[in-house]
Amino acid sequence: MKVITLILIIAMTMALSSTPTTSSSPDEPFPLQENARMPSKRVSRFLVEQSTAPARTYANNVCQMNQINCVSVGKAGHTKNSTCCNLRCVHLQSDRRNCGLCGFVCPYNKVCCGGVCVNVATDVNHCGLCHNVCGQGLACLYSMCDYA
Image (cartoon, rainbow, N blue to C red):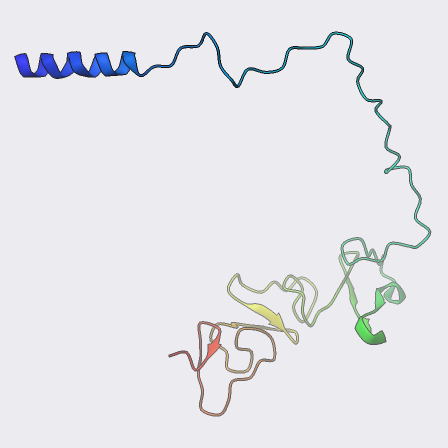
């Protein structure tokens, strides 16, 4: 019992002696300046700005059952034909929520490749990504051809 009491007294002494005092600290903040002028705040006109170019992004491409609105120009001038599904232009060949036809959703472990839901982790014709074909006699495992 005396040993425990002695250890407790030593621990309390060390804790009290190592506690820093709060009378002065080099990290004190600067005193407030009463006459300091705040910089003028300029009101942003970001939301009022008008863009001259029409917004034609995938997220806001509303078709309203008009297929002409769903033709967009991709890289190198190639046109990408889309289909109007639920008032949105979608690519039935690659859209996971509209794979092959409107409203057909691929399961969580599959990707839409060419309008068909495929498992890119094990499919030898779509290994890792769409249209990545493994060589002759190679298997696709964990999205890699010839995993070993």
